[in-house]
Structure formats: C-alpha cells, structure tokens
Image 1: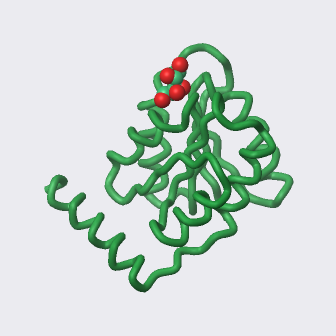
Image 2: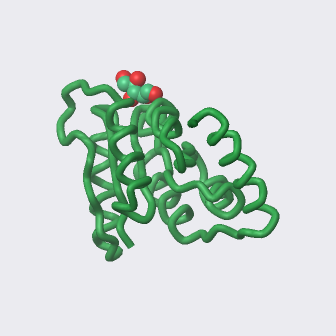
Length: 149
Ligand code: RB5
C-alpha cells in the first residue's frame, strides 16, 4: 500500500517519525512535504497531496500541520477527497469505516508522537464499511458535484 504524506514546517518532526513508522511497517511512502522548519504555506501542500491522491498516485494520505485542520481544509477542496483531522484512535477508525475518509490529518502541536502513531495505525487498519455509509458518502459527493461543474 502506498501512503502519500505531506506537511508544513509545524509538522516536519512528526512527519519524520510517521514516515519511519510507516516504512518500518512495510508501507511505501511518498513524501510531498517540507523537510525543514522554514515557513511554508500549508494550503499548497494540502492541495499537492490531495491532487496526487485524486490522480491515483497513492492509496491513502496523511497530512500534518500544527493542528491538522488548515491542511485538511485545503485538501478537501479537491474533488474526491475526504480529509479529516483526528485526535484519538476511535475517531481515526470511524472516519474510515463510516465516512470513507481517504486523508488523515494530524496536528503536530496537539498530539504526541506515540498517540499519532496509534492514530495512523487505527486509520490504516480500518476498512470502509459500505452499505448505508456508502449511500451517505455518495450524498457528500453529490454536493461536491453541484459546485464543481
Ligand atoms: C503554522 O504556524 C500553522 O498555522 C499551521 O501549521 C496549521 O496549524 C494551520 O492550520
């Protein structure tokens, strides 16, 4: 499985930890984020990763900024993307199972490294449940289509 990853300056350290965690577990990882702490604009990274995922360059993605919020807000503007920041493991598996989220957001200034790894594992190990959840996800897609003609 290929995981796309992106981060701004606030997320560089956590990104490095998560990349190591993922490669140790055997995932392929594509890094779209900054590797320094020099300021960069999170919307640009969110867009880059979201467009790559929507183009089929990876299976799922992880976006990291200070809160996990700004970068996922940007990613969600790309059709087909369902990005959500998670701060606990329960939400992380539910957003995959019920909302079919395809991008996990992490807040490097909010969650510690060990919790972040558990959140990542919870997200990646969960599977979309389909059925009534798929119908609701389809409703979200219909809203998206209405504004992307
Ligand atoms: C950068 O200082 C910070 O604003 C950014 O990482 C993020 O938290 C935005 O949502």
